[in-house]
Amino acid sequence: MRARSLAEPALHLPGFVPFRLNRLAAEVSNHLSEVYRARFGLEIPEWRVMATVGSEHGCTAQYIAGSTRMHKTRVSRAIANLTKRGLIERASNSGDRREMRLRLTKAGRRLYAQLVPLALERERAVLACMSREQLRGFVAGLDRLEEFLGLRPNTRAAEQSQ
Amino acid sequence: MRARSLAEPALHLPGFVPFRLNRLAAEVSNHLSEVYRARFGLEIPEWRVMATVGSEHGCTAQYIAGSTRMHKTRVSRAIANLTKRGLIERASNSGDRREMRLRLTKAGRRLYAQLVPLALERERAVLACMSREQLRGFVAGLDRLEEFLGLRPNTRAAEQSQ
DNA sequence: CATATATAGTTGCGCACGCAACTTTCCTTG
DNA sequence: CAAGGAAAGTTGCGTGCGCAACTATATATG
Image (cartoon, rainbow over all chains, first blue to last red; front, top):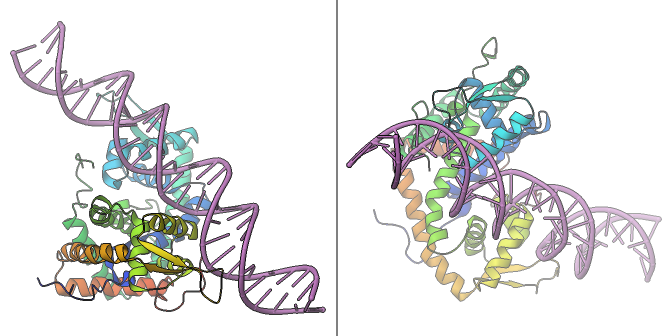
């Protein structure tokens, strides 16, 4: 466990994994945003809400905040925008009147059906730079890191937000 | 190359790599920020500038923007803050009086010497969740993605900014 | 040598974000 | 069933960010 911090601390940002992850994530997001921003007028929070509600019909804002790890105010504003645009609808008819069940409207489902194939294609185009073996190793690392950092309980309720 | 977008588009955000990268990067950054924010009062842009200037003595703001892929205004403001705090100093004595050569001050070098080992330790602590073999595979994927996305020319001049 | 164009860096502006505080509803516990 | 506390969601506020425009300097061109 001896660190290499003797005379030369030797931190080079381009080789520092936390920095590399940030830069890579930002770059990949930029690629993706051309799809959901330029072509559909959605920002990242709106896109994430659409994607979540699209596959988890009837979920709550709290659930979205937990699974995407977005701050609940960010989720709240994204939902407000999407509702105003008529892409999702809120139903408070649950047994718990504090929470709002979210669903895509007809227009929302139409947009979702257009958006998803394009998003998947963008993902595929980026990941295509790796061999199948490389991709397997990379995703295994992702899995491991997410589990270690407690990002894995996606399917579960994800009650404890940050 | 047949996509799976027939009836069910099948996009599940927790398995969508661009999203996973964003979430992971944000989480790792949070871990790191406890070091440079709480203990040294630096935000991400300031930390990146410190780290860059610390290893690339005499570099310019343009170089930092290119290598970190931060917007030049973000870099400019970070430099202004760090200069105000007396951690870096600007010298316009170059042959080109438009650009400013950046260096750590004595106080800056002191802070840098404290900060770097802690940052490296945080990186190590996170990466320690992977076996040596897993880490190798993960970093290989990182390398490949960065090269594909044009994020690699770090050591070079990085003249073409975004 | 004058004009035009490009580059390094800064600043005004609008906006999205996170924090804290708030409202409303639910769930305790006496 | 009353009261305290917790949870879902919203909103006011301050701030950091990106865009566009700007200043100043350097370089190209007639």
